Length: 163
Image (cartoon, rainbow, N blue to C red; front, side, top):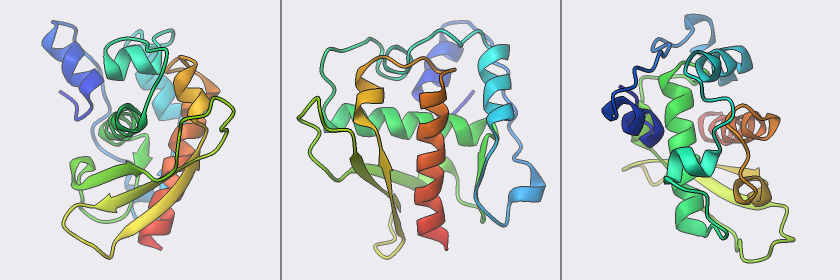
């Protein structure tokens, strides 16, 4: 039902996820994150205590590299857009974007990761954002403030991209 692997995996396993699929019209001329919409999605689907790694990568991992980090951020972004928690201007779909990690994530003491969000097929359209790689490593739940913080950071990358 959704664009994120988590939603797709759960939908194919027989669970029915409830998602708000239409974005709030009032925010289509800017970038907006609605924590209320995200929390409703998480609560309605019993996902509050599910870890981001387990949900998006299939299992919690002791180490998470660039590829897994990019996949996790991409799937989180896809789900937030799909349920209407993260909106942006224009008609692009979540799958029209690509998230890439732009900094070394090797150190457990590295508190700042740099990522880039781009529009596939458009070499000019790109935005950057920072995130905390430790949040991804330490099994944050989908309902945690860290997950919402991650979505806000992705939103700042969208602001950089669009404005």
